[in-house]
Length: 400
Ligand SMILES: [Zn+2]
Ligand SMILES: [Zn+2]
Image 1 (cartoon, rainbow, N blue to C red):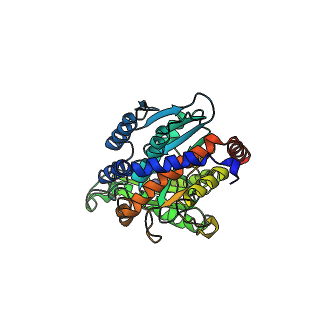
Image 2: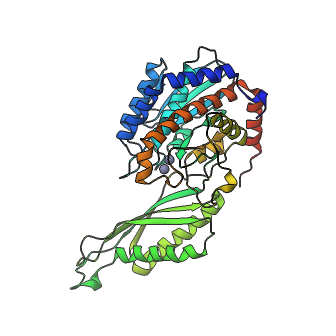
Image 3: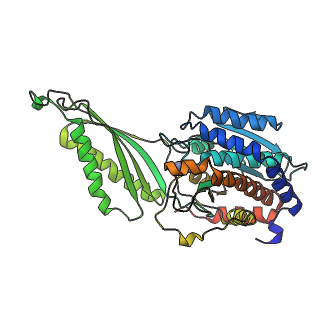
């Protein structure tokens, strides 16, 4: 990054000093959210805690926001110039709590906002702190974009914890789907000929998808679980249901794969006579278009805190997840870098990761994440050349 792409050094130092002086406040936020994991759209305590922290810093906060009860928005800064958004996620996973470490995302997003608000300085732009619920399910960010909450944003920044430091999370597109079959119950021994077996329909669909998997691209994924498979072995099941995720690197591929999976569902219905109900999720998760100039600024800021980043080329190509930040990155310049909050061999969505997200490595990630996000926001606000490169890269990245 060239010198003219950086914010004044004195301001970055002030941000670092503020975060160090307030590390107890920040870690308390992280630990409280970690200790009380809440699922998508139900993150009431986390949302209230974060709104309260912003209020105590003298900021007005809108919550609910964008039609979502557990979303919030706060904005401050100068009256002219670009707008940088700092994003906070805070939903957890069923059974395994904060195994995706969203308590750290919340702390860094809100913490960076607090650090910038504490600067005794008229900023040459605006800062919008957004609380974005329901990343693990439901696509909160997409819903907030549809409601106009991101309008006017010139750069959207967040961090995500991982077992390593990496400039951008490898991401692919994803569609979720609930499928159900309705048949007719009957005595499974005395009158099987009167039954229509919903479980058979679902098992055929499941097996069709298993067969399909050999003939899809190596970088595509279909995976699912059966959530209802009948009530008793002596009753022909009149209801069976499942949930699947369908993933492909880009949107066009996702649409094609979705049609093939839909055909598998229909095959189960055709074979058994059960009635099919398919509910594709209203929000697809899109691939991540990490904005390179912003990403480089973030990496440089995190490196100055002593973090070492692994080159993206060293990542195994199929270690990809999905995030609703991908959707944001299609509409606005955005980054979603990973910050190490656990040892390399501990992956997210696993109980051991949840332990680290509330432990020492998680604490260090929350503090470094807060600093690096705040410094990157400053770089953007203070550098017209970084703003221009960010915009140019965003406008020339083609839809694939
Ligand atoms: Zn996750
Ligand atoms: Zn996550």
